[in-house]
Image (cartoon, rainbow over all chains, first blue to last red):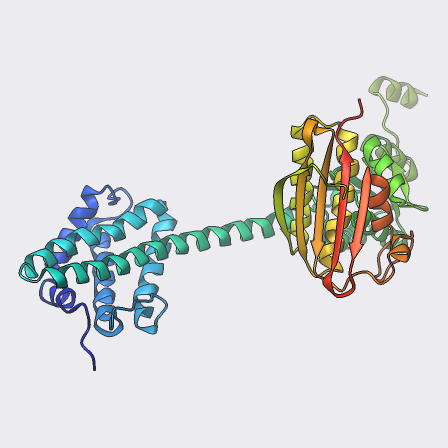
Length: 297
Length: 138
């Protein structure tokens, strides 16, 4: 089995684990990468220790012929621990730059010791420093990647949550429902909207449904088709569908697109649609004085 | 070429439905920034939406470039996909024609909503659509 190129590094990690650990944490503190407000002394030390151990076994097995690739199996342990520590730190609000400089602080500690041990062999010294630098840089970059991945997952999750949130079916009055649409109506959302709405029609025994598109910026043929289909499904369920909130510019655009709304009832504002809907279920909104007069009779 | 004299200001990938929304917003923002009237914005953005979705649905994805012109009289886009191309352009432009279960108003509508419209399709190598929209007619 060929000897590792990082013999001295390996020796240092073997002989002086505690010393390296202490110096590293001190160095990190100096570099401003230690967050004692977020982590206890003990946690910080445990994390650093498990990283060092993984680093050692990586160097022992994975560092031959000078080629280094963090994706190699030898580094699986280290990758796992780096990811774990990074997740923990993200949770507690550590910044990506702080995490990276925490890892990078290990360099100074290692350099000092290498310099000491390889005083007589400048060539080896340069060689090992180069290799250690490459490895530790790769670790730091990896933590940043983990950070980004974690953030992306958060964004994805929020998007999914918004998807659900943005299709609320609201009961305006007995048998009158409204569905205020906001933003983009892509196929996925259109499907959700339709399902929610049809279920609500059954649950609330609705007779009139107002689909309000005031918050939809662009109505292209796909959106138009989704709207028309939703309206057709509502009609099939025995309810009436009114599409409201069609602005003058959207009306003009739809005409030029050649979209024919057919028998779907449309209104320019939700206010008009509401009046229609209430009339349809036999209710009227009156000023109180007029109401008094009506009841007096 | 209707985009002659234009300068490319953005290049977007078209892969998913979300990319269509992003393309709409980018084109809309670019027009708004150059002082365009809202009606003209809505019209051109709707046309862009049709073309970008076509590239994804029929072309299996593609790219969309946005162009600005000196004096900001108009704005342009070029949308390229690598799909199977359009067999009969004239038929595809006809209202009501659709190879999918859709309204079949997209291409013809985009042409009516834009100021200039140009389409190139070459059998195996995909489709290029170029459009411009007037920025301001006040």
